[in-house]
Length: 268
Image (tube, rainbow, N blue to C red; front, side, top):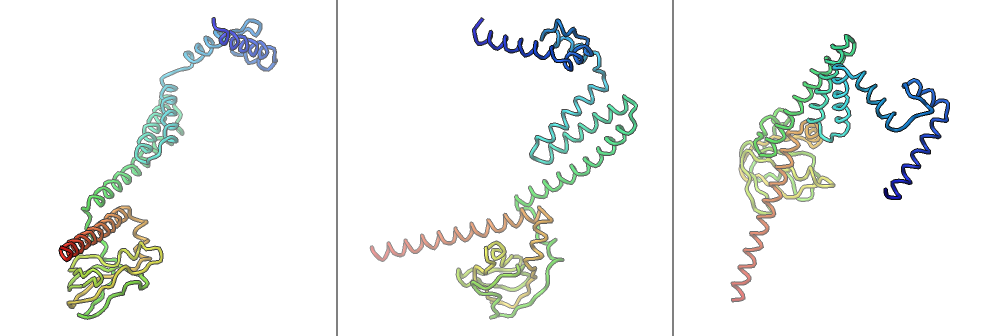
């Protein structure tokens, strides 16, 4: 036998001998049905196994597995599997209560089942909404009841580059022009959403009305409330602003390519 194993074995034996000399430990050993003067690790293990087998019942088995699922909920980082594990644990403890005729335990965990099921259903609906929003399947129609109507005439300036930004606009009729990039905006488009994301809430462009039209407006404060209350809108707004930024990058790349081609032609 390797010397390391022998040293560890001797240390464990000395610990066991010292423990059996302690009166309190000796009493515990006696209560367990062991002889303090003749105790070994094998004897302790076998006795614990006998106690476990003797006390394990179908009800205790349900309780042990249920406890395992409850411990698992503490290790989970996402809500959906946490709720599922919690529901399984509640069901197992409810069975334990029924088998042991413990009415309070049975009713407690039986009551927790529909509560967890309700929360799980709500979470799954939110995940589904968020997925649809991320895929661009969400309509902005539901936001209209929170918005205020405003009309503009041709030649009116809605806001200028660098102005303080306090609201987002949705075009209903008419045409509008982003002057810095010479892009027309028609009905059904959002304007001023990037100002919501800038650190100091400043306008990122100048928009002028070029055809009489109507817009709906919503303040950033109200927008912020909806953003935190509804993950569906949060995902939609993230996708919307990402698309707008990508469009701006694509437009700048095309302008840069056009300027480079023009420069190359002049040199040629």
